[in-house]
Amino acid sequence: MKNSLLLTVCLSVLSSAAVAQTAAPVTEDAVTVADGFLLRNMSLSDLGYRDGVTFRQLAGDTTLYFPVRTSGPIQSGRLTLNLQHGATNDVDRFLQVSIGNRIVASQALPTAGGALTLELDVTAADVQSGFVAVRLSYSGAFSDYVCVDERASGDFVQILPESHLALRLTAAEIATPSDFIGFRPAQVYVQLP
Image (cartoon, rainbow, N blue to C red):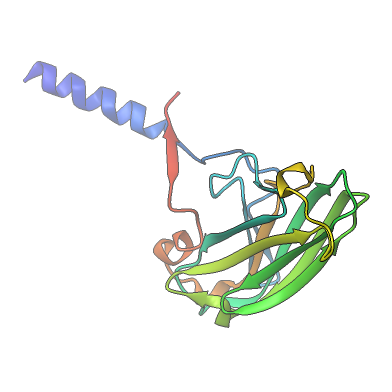
């Protein structure tokens, strides 16, 4: 009896000091309140892509899934992709971005390389089955007339981990903590001191 009481008290003290955090530190406020709206940012780092997403050898394709349980409160959204890219040879390279079922950008990447930022609009209609799906397709070619092993191209494109989806949500339509949690990454770690 005495041991169970002591265990209960210890667990109560420890649980009151528990701090919830996402999988990786967020560089800017994940949630901001302004003029009756909530602004929610979800980065690639929040989704578990701590190093971002990288493509090489003139080819690559992946789909990123940002959790959004419901589209009701979404007034507007913006996907910001921060890129680093380069190539050692004169190759034609492209990055195509689709949000949901629509292609929203097809960006040529200059041979010189460097940094590039793409800002793309996201709508409530882009939410499907509890996610905003973002498909990234990277492709390239040397020339129609030159036969070269693509492994020798020395090319890359990296979508940096601070790339993010920012949603502007109508605060009045988020009535419960469960509604709000629907706009958080599913995996959350609890750290005890």
